[in-house]
Amino acid sequence: MATRNRVAIIGAGPAGLTAAIYLGRAEYPPVVFEGPQPGGQLMETTEISNFPGFPEDIPAAELMSRMRAQAERFGARFIAESVTSVDFSKKPFTVSTGAQSIEFDCVIIATGAIAKWLGLPSEKRLRGKGVSACATCDGFFFKGKHVAVVGGGDSAMEEATFLAKIAASVTILVRGDESSMKASAAMAQRAKQNAKIRFLFNIEIVDILGEQSVQGVRIRDRISASEQTLDVQGVFVAIGRTPATSFLGDSVELVNGYVKATDNTKTSVRGIFTAGDVQDSRYQQAVSAAGLGCMAAIDAEHFLKETIE
Image (cartoon, rainbow, N blue to C red):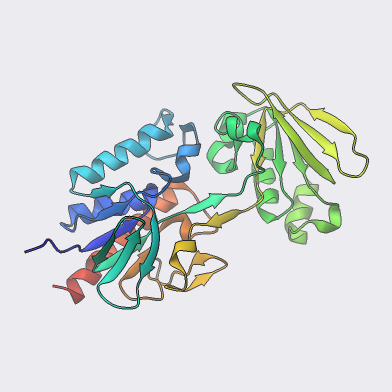
């Protein structure tokens, strides 16, 4: 008799791996679809200093490798493929990749959200070496240094205000003029009133300087076309995130692209749960994602016991 596939976890970041650990311990070892970036967005960060239990900085790759090994210890099986489509319209639920389709009694969506980047080769080269998309994750490393924040929305104002507590100075680079800013009036005013924050408008980033670390930013005035170099040691890109939900189609309810969650992890389809940044547009931290992964696993376990057994 074929083994019944009880639970699928789509995504292998902090949320997905934590869910896999909890489900394995509950004797529902899941199948984990790793997707294009095993370890999730955290793999774009070099060192982790704010994950509980590690008094010393730990390399992001090592942290995720440990979580994966722990999930495997409790029976999780990993498939190194990306999910391309799902069918949640009938039970069992179907999860499909380009190579196969597998049926499951329950599914946890934990595919995360992808930071939007500027698209510069230097930006990609220096990610984790002074270029970041998360001030609360990496701001600690820029104590007493000069940094730039790219963006004009609320997230950029939040990043700048947070960094001002740590850095020597913060320069917010806005592509349009002041009237083009998408930040709420309250958030923008808060940043403007901070003596350590300054704004530069109508700015295009030409290049991020440095080889092993950020040594400055080359910017161009979009009105005069004049260029100058800013002396900064860190660049925080805050131009938004895109939740990784395109493969879902209309299978579950979304809000602004994020999976809509009720009662913490439940989706619009009974038996389908969600965890991590794919449903959390506010906190987007490794530890909050892990917490939601734990909750999704417990909710999935209860669902299986109530409806399947």
